[in-house]
Image (cartoon, rainbow, N blue to C red):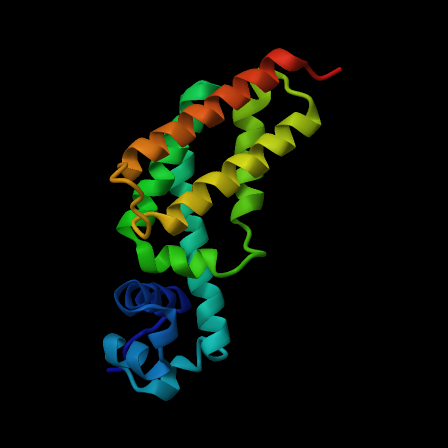
Length: 185
């Protein structure tokens, strides 16, 4: 009896392999082996490695977006900003290889999702559009950049946790400054 294979199952398996070994070590042969099917049967569902890589990136982006949405749920603007940063770093630490996939693509959709999510979170503060957009850019660049460097640099024995807490506090202060500075017209 033939095994019923789906695109989603292939992408899920490919994602698991990427998390174990990295995107650069992913192969059609290894995916088919893990699934217990012959390599040619994968091509009934995917066009090739580019299609698989694209599917993995989309899967990872959806996974991260879900984590950020969960972190923000039911929180006020300031709590959501703090909790999203904490969740983002936790996901980056727990799923380092997946974050490398996501962060390796400068035009990925995560910033668009973050912008939509943050527009909802920041709406009660009634910020000026330029302040809202600037905050989103600075916030995302800061947490993303910190997570990419996390664990690579230990300067004067200062804990990365301490530094990240300071980063979050700085973002909260910046948000408070924008909120005080002016409202939408």
